[in-house]
Amino acid sequence: MRTQYAALPFRYGEGGIQILLVTSRETKRWVIPKGWPMKGKHPHQAAAREAFEEAGIKGEVSRIPIGAYTYGKRLRDGTVVPCRVEVFPLHALEQRRRWPEFDQRETAWFTPRAAAGSVQEPDLAALILGFALALTDAA
Image (cartoon, rainbow, N blue to C red; front, side, top):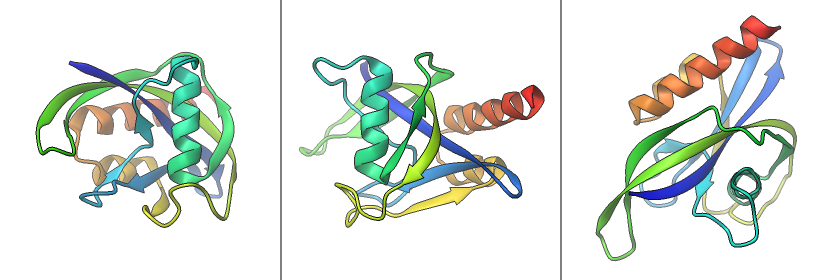
C-alpha cells in the first residue's frame, strides 16, 4: 500500500460550506487534490502544495488529517497500485486565475452533499460529509 497526501479545500459561501473538487487528468473524474510525499515537506505541506498545483488554491492547511481513504492508482504503465490517502482540510482563502495544471484540470465548488455524490470513493464521500457536519456543528 502506497501513501498519498490530499487537501480538502473548503470555504464559507452564501449557502454555507463549499468543497472544491478537481478533475483527474486521465479519466476526468471528480477528485480532491492529492499527490505523493515530497522530500523535505511535512504531509500537510505536501497536501497544500498539491492544492495549489492542481487547483490554484492558497489558504490555511491543518497539520492534522481528518481521516484517510483508499483507492487504486493507475500508473503510467497501466498497473494499478493500492493507495491510502491522508486528507488534510485546507481553508481556501484565494484561488488564482492560473496555476501549474490550469490547462489540465477543471475545478468547481460544490455543496458538501453534491461533492460527496460526485466522488467515486465511498470513504472519501463519508469524509467530506463528516467534515462538513463537524464544521457546521462547531459554528
